[in-house]
Image 1 (tube, helix red, strand yellow):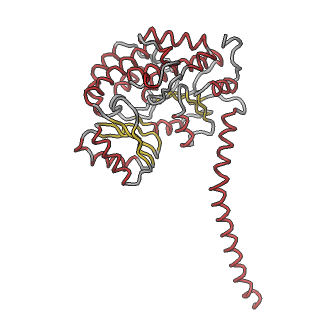
Image 2 (cartoon, one colour):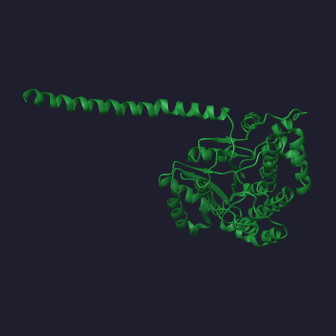
Image 3 (cartoon, rainbow, N blue to C red):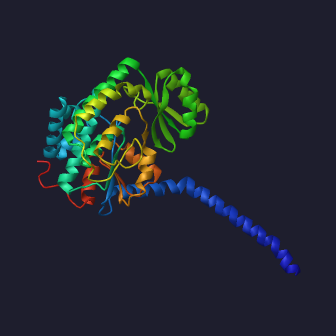
Length: 372
């Protein structure tokens, strides 16, 4: 009895010491080794470890443009990319081959240029994947502007129709910017509900609304500059990690855009919208597009409505996809997918190396003579 009583405190002390060691080890692992493991597995994933298929395919929106964004497509896949960009030039009346390959970034900045340039580049990548790997998406979605190439991929719109609509969309949005000005700011590290409250409090200063629900920790606000700047200041005071003013030429996805809804709706009515041949998740609602008429109405509503990308990624869970693929310039959407953890397989087509690796994973080496 005495021995057991004497041993009990020692046992308790040993267990306490072991729990302390375990906690210290977990902290050490989280701080030093966990980031290394994550980086290793991300690099391993990007390198490609086998066949992939049945992909949720995402198309980026404004902000993804960059100088030379289609240059690698024209070098590595000149026949396909050159043909798509030439057709895009015919549809829009813009020198998109030069704009997407050699123009400096400042020439791509105006929304009436950026919009058709991004869509043309995305369509060129899509056609390369189709012709060289027989690629067919499982599910598609587009972030705002990206909804147009997504609808092309789903057979709802013809490429020429989408490009003409996007050209007009950009012109109308540029007109809003000239008349009303405006600004957009990304708010990081603060919940959307709190940001909505702040926007409501700043309403006496002017229009300020959430334009993009990008991920749980990132939203974008849009509206008139004084109200946007004050909302950003209050968001930081409320605990936001950062508030980053965006280099955009118009206050997209806020009620200021209602001024062009009727005119753009008339443009949409002139175009035939077919029923989707594969699932399309709308960034306006985060739900499936039902038919061609529904797709047309959603494109009108998205002008002044917020982009609900959090809901889009949540809706993907209802579809048994084999991974996520961003088709077009940049890696913004693949970044959202990675951080949200929607799937362990996430790919982008940002550059020639990634496209080459993707073609191998889709089961097809680049076609002989593709760069001839």
